Amino acid sequence: MSTPTIHAAASPEHERRVPWLLRWQGLFAASSAGPLARNLSLLAGLVLCALMAGLPLVTRAGLSLLILSSGLLWLIWALCTPAGRIGPINGWLLVMLAVAVLSTGFSPVPTAAAKGLLKLLSYLGVYALMRQLLATAPPWWDRIVAALLGGELITAVIGIRQLYVDSSALARWSDPNSVAEGTVRIYSTLDNPNLLAGYLLPILPLAAVALLRWRRPMARLYALSALLIGAVALLLTYSRGGWLGMVAALGSLALLLALRAGRHWSPLLRRLFPLLLLLGGGLVLVLAVSQIEPLRVRVLSLVAGREDSSNNFRINVWMAALQMVQDRPWLGIGPGNTIFNLIYPLYQQPKFNALSAYSIPLELAVEGGIPGLLAGLGLLQCSLRQGLAQLRREHPQVLPALGAVAAILGLCVQGLTDTIFFRPEVQLTGWFCLATLASLPTAASDG
Image (tube, rainbow, N blue to C red):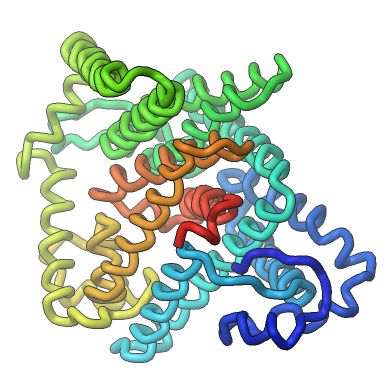
């Protein structure tokens, strides 16, 4: 997770500057002229493209193999590359990892928490390889996004086709106790409408950036198809969190692009245009909600309180999760869903079993206590600051950075009331967005 440098033996002065945590990197730099070392970027790119394209299509065993391969490739690359300084984003990740290690050690069931810690380490390995590849060879950003869009298109089309075949399987997602009773929700290959929405959500702003960034007509048509078909599929999931996240992601991307395009405008126009854009977007949303009945019914369920069964379920889970935080506020119960499934039944209300806290901030607090929550908020603030700083800069990765910020904001909005993010189909796209920001040319100087 360090900034790549020239493959050469480290001098004593360089060793004194390298943080002691990274002294092991570059141990084999002097002998890194072999064919494997020369083709590491190509191998990393191919593995990451296969991983991102296969997120919704490959079995869990296949995903695990690709994730493990990514971590091993980064380890080899790090041994062949002298370490640089730790950037601000990587610094916060190390803080989160330290909290996770401590919470595992003090967990009521350390062996169960250790499984969650190993899973976190495996995801960090993927992130580290992504960041290293994007910092070393930025053109791979477009190739990884192209692979991601390919998997998204296949998944979205499969989901939309579910409306034209036997819909009896879709009926199990129609809640008779909800104000939105009878709503048919697609789920494609992911077997859960909310998970499908979470998977599609961060990809849409990346598709929009690809549409603006790519120059060839067929490439732009490809990106446009992924954007439109993905948005339609997300709407048909009828996931309220997914809808809100999509509005936040695409709306923030439009606002960021407007701010960047108008940085040379007059001060008055720079102030008025974003406000007019927000007012126009709000008006379109109000008209859509008031005129489209399925949309209106689903949105009204947000304010139905406990009268809606989905709302009532989440409220009960949140209350139990808050009690868990109150009992273990400093280091939590430990990372991962395995330990959560063991501890949560001690707090749950009858008939309200849950696999997670259904809120990312609550989940962070449950797993790592208040330090875990603060570390997560610190990482979010640092990432957004790193991305927003690109509004004033000129380099080829500006648009990817703005797309990553928009995707992260969309995931945050959905994550307020769900923890779909922790599934690999969603989380790995989030790590890709974070790696995009951490690999920026100015990442080391913004800390």
